[in-house]
Length: 340
Image 1 (cartoon, rainbow, N blue to C red):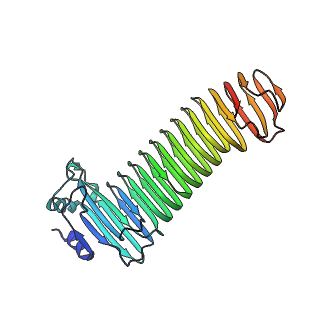
Image 2 (cartoon, helix red, strand yellow):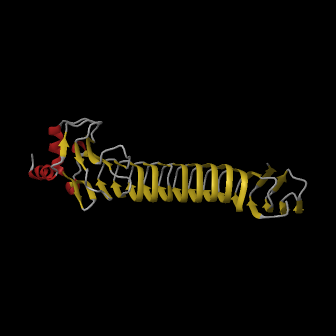
Image 3 (cartoon, rainbow, N blue to C red):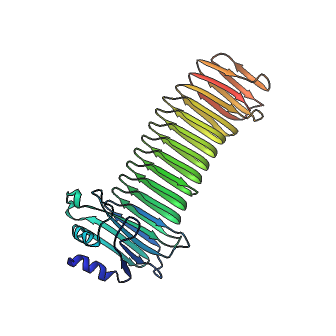
């Protein structure tokens, strides 16, 4: 075994090394008694998982597989290929650092490795995670969480604090989290459920599916559709090429689409509603709430005949419903309004 690998395992005296397969870690390092507060992980090709689940013993697990279609490698083959990598797991001053880097950026993919990490730590932990090709999973953490992958998906569940994640090509799944969330992908879809606080979601090419969100929410896509249900607070959303379908809204809304239809159903209207759509709008508003209506399109249709004062014409409705209140401003080719 090469000297640098020997030094690595001597330095990790609390590590156990096993023969590798896709379900068994190549190495496990205990973190018991280390008082971990910060987690830093950087790998050039594998996935990263960090969990604050209380039932798990604090530890770092290292998973190594071949990138040539052979997921299960012998210990001897792994050690041979590891000569082309710098691999280390260190603990000091409440920080754990796990790193796997390709030496000299060698290009023989047949001999390359996928080196991933699973980290189990106390709940009160900050993270800084980066991988060039794998997915990232985080759960049951409270702190400042920063993570980035160039090609994998992001999975986030039960995080509290400041959450900032990016992927260049994967999907994003976030649930049961708050209170300051920023997640971005250049090419995948985003699913968010049961989250609260300041929520910022953005994709350049995928769809958005949002359920049970509360707070100040911004969610945009450059090319996909948007669906959302049970949204409370303030909601700003838009797409350049898809449709928008919103139900069970109890929020202020600013929405736009350049290439699709728009449907929205409100249980209650927040401070305002602003909709700018190049196609058709179907919108359902609470019939007993006071609203200021400013609707303009090639054709505007509405089902109310009473409790309205103002102008109601073929191409516009401008006036007060139930004495007035929050402003509802809509611009579209055609508007269909009904009261619920």
